[in-house]
Image: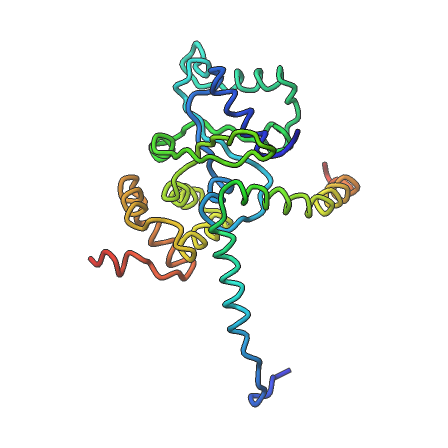
Length: 65
Length: 193
């Protein structure tokens, strides 16, 4: 469906600027702090990783193997 | 005790015990020292092939002494081609070319807070320009994203990077990278031909 050309979109430049600022703030942290962040990120995705592995185990082998 | 800081402690002990010579963290974890954290599952460690323990009688490099030491220390699990040390899959990569060799020689020591009142842990990691050059050489989609992060976050010294790319005949690969990713080649303005 074609979007009407009169449609007005919100200005999100301030949101993007804040995101950019957040990225720079993260990048400026010490190596040790970033390792702690990485460990926390990894812990958060661990249940997803485990579920994916379980799904793979249950999947039947490809035909012909 | 599990966690990357403990993994670093084990690697440093391997150096102290002469199992490996010099080392440098490379890949995503090395990039972490310079740019915004991104999720990774493994820890890549570039190691010198000069350590006597790694030389076999035929002159070929062998990592068996590394794995034997780790087995004896109780690290027997393997995940994604890496041996799991304190919860992290660690891949030991022997120096394989001149870029690796230079990166290892020029690697920097970083001290990270250990927490709990313990003394800081010293970690040796690649310089930013070598992380970028290495990513350019490996050239997977995630490596291209990493390079663009270094550029957008001003996390690499462009003069130092150009020297590395020039020394290792990678300037053509750099131009290709810029064209493929649509990133303006920073050297077009800084080093006009």
